[in-house]
Image 1: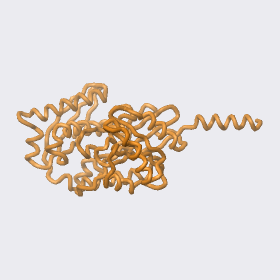
Image 2: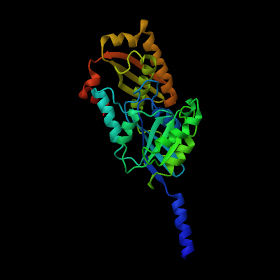
Image 3: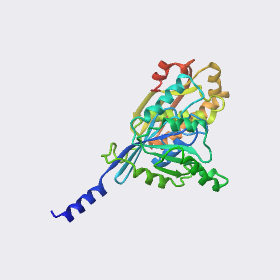
Length: 308
């Protein structure tokens, strides 16, 4: 084979080489990390609410486009205020997610940069490319402040790219995907092209129910509740799910149940409808409430509830 043909073959091989990588999505609480990952993956797999720390676990979202596969790792918001065992576990999840990734999406809110953002910046590894994702640009009243804001942040670190987006509205997320794809290493895919997450249906059921609780009761019980799936059975297209809502105090149990059981019924109904859309089949969901005092500050209890 002559030299020209060899060059052509090598160029074609490079053009068709597969690129795969782990992409950590990090940021302070409530900057829109989960909304961004859901938007990038194209389906809801990470729960969202307006309450800080809705995300409590690492969740991987998988996107395969052509010869590129992204494995996004959604992380809890790094917590600097609360110091109980639950928050220590979540902070460890953030730090661990940064130890073996190929790319970091550092998400901040447009026009806002504070001590919490600075603390996360210090955690980012020096040997991994970081894309600064400036989210919620649609909320900026004066778009002229964006350029000076970006210029100021460019002095904080040498970012691989700086991409303003609106995760909620899907603005510029294609540009973010393009910028991220260029930074992934050449590697065979780790998941099937149709996979969207590595989490089990059992885990997703617990998360979707917890989301409804946060949205309905977040102001009253911001950190004092979690969900445990006690039974998950599949019968053809039907899924039978038995879930326990764990609360810290007896008084919290009454709040979750509500007058005449209306709050619990509403939360369960909303969760069931979401799960039927997710699983594309009928769901029988039975939910009750249990009191387990001190669960959020007990390392053993957290482990039994799936917090690693």
